[in-house]
Image (cartoon, rainbow, N blue to C red; front, side, top):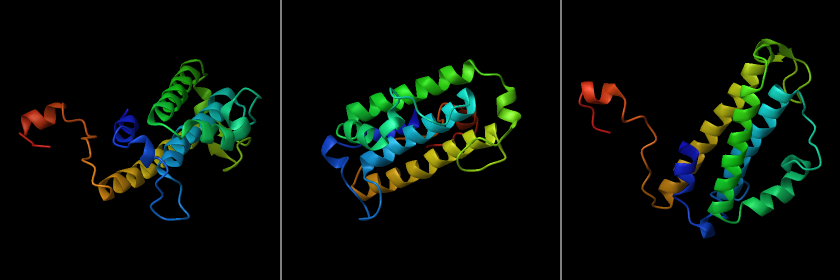
Amino acid sequence: MVTLKILNLFKDEELGYRFVPQWRTVGELFHHIGGHQYFVARGVFKKRWEPKRSEPDMDWTSHMLKTTTTTESLSKWLREAQALVNVWCVDTDASLLESIRDDNPWHRGIRGWLLLHHAYQDELHHRGQLISIARYLGKNIPSVFAEEYQEYVTYDIQP
């Protein structure tokens, strides 16, 4: 997962870094990526937007405070969120992706696949912020593109 590659650039003490005072911290950005995908996927695949008591979004602030202190806890959260999304996806009737969703809290009357697309576009946006912050902090950014694809070999492209 590219997001985990980027997370590995940061030290625990850098998770509280805030590039602009009003922005999320590095740790909060990573938490938000997992949280957004978790919330949207549960809503689309499970048809449930309200959290149960045992779920992290019952109290996002508390969950965020627990998971943004170390890269290890953030990595665990991101992996758990993605694993749940994968399970929900496999166990879901594909018609949920095509139907117009009137029950979601943001965009009434939007198709399920478009809601999921929105969540993954949001990840890309925040990954861009995190890469910019990492560069600003002097980090060497890992390759996040598919260098092993045949086009690189065929056209002798150097990453």
